[in-house]
Length: 212
Image 1 (spheres, rainbow, N blue to C red):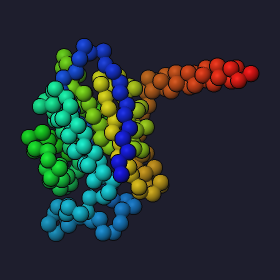
Image 2 (cartoon, one colour; image 1 turned 45 degrees about the vertical axis):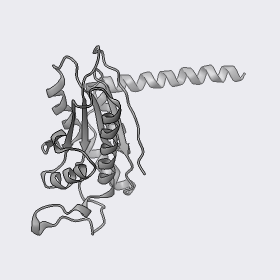
Image 3 (cartoon, rainbow, N blue to C red; image 1 turned 90 degrees about the vertical axis):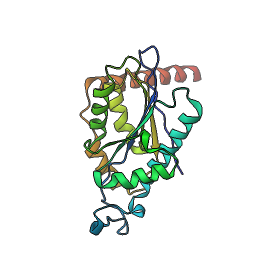
Image 4 (tube, rainbow, N blue to C red; image 1 turned 90 degrees about the horizontal axis):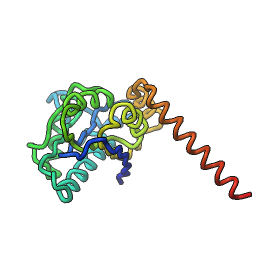
């Protein structure tokens, strides 16, 4: 089962054109079953070795791509950037192809090691574009908090969606991954958090007075 979360940051641009799907498939093998291993003799990852939380992201990417193709007028100006280690690229790409996505839509990023690095790479490409694409980031549900902190400081001028797949790994393993992903939080992030806290405090005050 897939869980989908959305963050939409409306941009200052008159309108967006095109769609950029960021499929984040960087992972390490800590906490994975022993059966999910690399076929080192062939120097490649066998199909069944991808962990469930990665196949969940792939399935969500296929679903997102299908929705765009069926509903958006700018559907043919769509790209998928697959972020993964080079040894995982082929097997993930094959699953996307099996899901009905043509390889012409797929680009590879084997250099970005964190979500923050992915966003920096994307910004270098689209910041100067007059009508930038809508960005869809596809990861796991727990990465939403990490992504939020980046959106506030770097993507507030763009239209962004976050799509999160379920991740059933142990809590301590996920927390370890989260520590490697968390970027340094800038002042905009803390201003955003303080604003939300102030709003919550005001609402609590209003509703508590109504009960009296």
